[in-house]
Image (cartoon, rainbow over all chains, first blue to last red; front, top):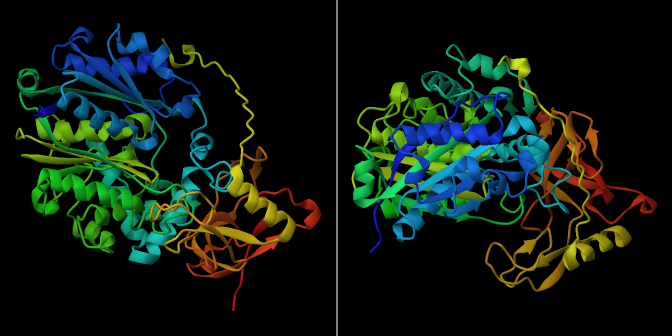
Length: 386
Length: 155
């Protein structure tokens, strides 16, 4: 029988432009914070899973020269490299490996040091070199073109998108690690910010950060001994989609990978009514319009209802299903760390360790990872052991 | 240590690649260059796919025949980009603003990315008819850049 697996400790660096640390020093900060929180050392870890976007730093086989910083010491190390999803994929992989009994205590580490390279040029290399690379215009232009389709389908307004930006940057003020903290941000300010690619403005988009995140998983009684309130994994699914950017014209409006992941993840975890059955969500929203579309794909509201959902206040910190109390990706984005940070934040909410941005009495938390629409991870964490 | 005592060591990595286009893209671009015709792949379920490819992503069946699509098309999506961007094919910055869109050729079930000759987003809409503007025959290289951009057809 599969073993129950839980997140038992988390650690994050501050997300910022970090000139003061090299990559090994950066990831050590996250690992130390994670292990120190439970009085553990690297000797207590059985296996490691590492993830980042290799092109961002221009370093191939990064696990090779980070080995000492991670503390491998002859132990198993798995390296994943699947874009924006990589962080949540390390968590899903930890769940599979621990659940199947191959390893017990698994430390997931995701990082990115985006200030060291050229993120927009690097991200263009995710596009097919023959057909799409010349046109894609980094993440932003590509994203804006998909946004036009979503706006056309759903009728969401720039004001509704701006409300997501306001929510994120205000929530971020309660998260000590967030990069973009804007306590006084207004909808008008978002609507007046620089247009990057129509209809997406500067404050509609995530920042570019340096940062690292670490999450320790363990199983059964060991998990209970490590954490007073383990965040038990009830679902960890991944779903992929078609090859080319232009294949599915409704990529953002009808994210097939996210919808598939949602259906499977909710079925595993017995979630029927997300607003009722989920207490908090940490989703990978690279832009405001994406968060609105994701409300629909995650069935937080009806199709086409993303704009009305933010108007309703349900995703606010004090709403019925708060989304990204951490401030989310709109407030910090070090890509290789970002999807793992969603899992960490969801686990912190279940463990009651989210500090100022803690949502009261969280029993069930949702986390997602996003890789350019084509890849989605979805995890459900609960206070109750499966 | 103070902020300026932390060193940053610049390094430039220049990597050159030659991507094999493969048999489908090679056939497509050769026909595009020599005949100005656009050839897509059709799968047994009837999905017509660009870029041409061996397997249909909608039904996972192997594609079975070439079919001509376009050259007229419509916009499946669009944006106007205002931030500088380096074209990896040329290494040069593209002047901003510029329009780019998801181009749906008539008779095709998927979109391809290309430039739009319009920089006012309020003049663009989903479904707007567009037509390709070709490079002169002598200037064609056998790539998607043999189509200069797409021009909106306003009625």
